[in-house]
Image 1 (cartoon, rainbow, N blue to C red):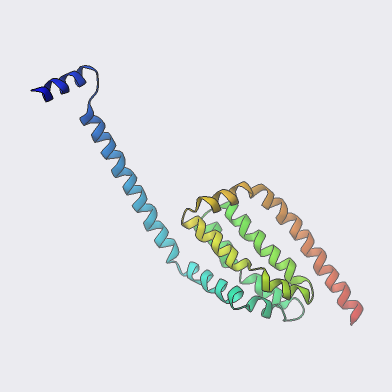
Image 2: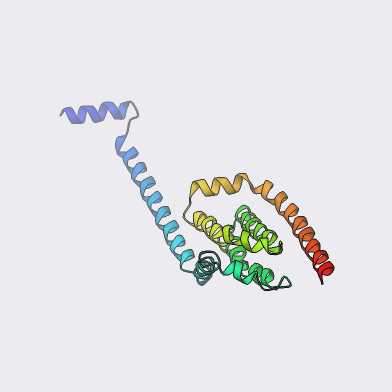
Length: 187
């Protein structure tokens, strides 16, 4: 009896807990569905052949120091090969993850690596310590896994990264030009 009086009083006051419970349950179910879809998409992205290729590239280029070894090939050929191996990272960030700020951050890391690698002799030493492939893989994986810290960091620096890319392109041009000038004087 008390229960029905309580329900009547709640109903009179516009307090319908059954309706609220239904709304809450529907919202929880919708959220669960969204989380499951996101997880499925995450798994699909990480099972792509291009993602596996990036993992292998990062492993061999940075962890096994193939990047500085390739950089020893004279005439800028090694640095060109190294740069070409970074294209899967650009493709993945732009076409799979579909993030312009992430793509800018990936390109920025690649350009830093190219600029440092273009410095004769010393550039190969820098390549040992600058692990752009691993850094790019961390950025991409952070985006896929919704790492709020990585996403926030990349987005905050999107404009600055675009400006820095333009500056790095100019610096790469100047370093390559200086290297050619030095080589022409020595030989």
